[in-house]
Length: 94
Image 1: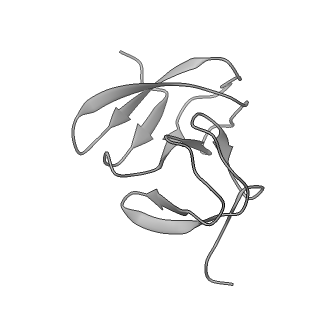
Image 2: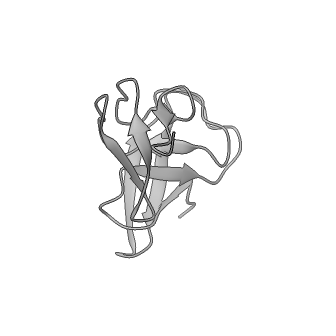
């Protein structure tokens, strides 16, 4: 089975896209490494390789977890399957 995005462990709120050309409406297969499981998510936006996809709905102020690490806070609501990047997630450092 081809993997389109990876997730470190089931508690993460995002996965990282590892293929080119992800388009809105596609169903992607993700691999959850720690549990060695696969998941499927329908994509809401085009997502470039290396960018993040939401694994769950996230509200403004929520913490984004990637590789079991806090990578920032949500600054605009994000739906499951949506693209996460600088337009909707900011660092907590400043």
